[in-house]
Image 1: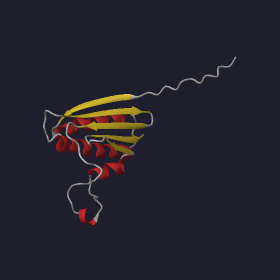
Image 2: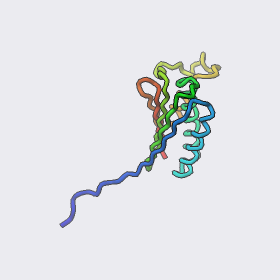
Image 3: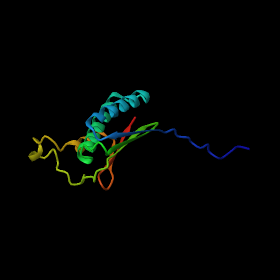
Length: 144
């Protein structure tokens, strides 16, 4: 008698976590993790470059703007790796920011500004970018 029950599909997920002190030197630890993950999971050069750019931007902002370079405060980086995607979640201990009402960096009056392009860049390079309501946590998804 044939078994009509479908076999459950098992999905493998790997998890990594970094707790970084809010010092600019912490970026080195982040970059090392990105490189290890890219090598282990055979991430393409384009996706690797996008992850490196986005995560450098997000973690730098968390250290400088979120935690105000207070080494007692941590930036938490969680990584969830599934067969076809990598999801990075970065959280700081700051109050957050209003990511909805940011100035458009492509507007003529903002083109020569030296800052204010980070969120625009990560939204262009990540396959998905989601902020929590407070603005002190961002989730970045990259297809692999």
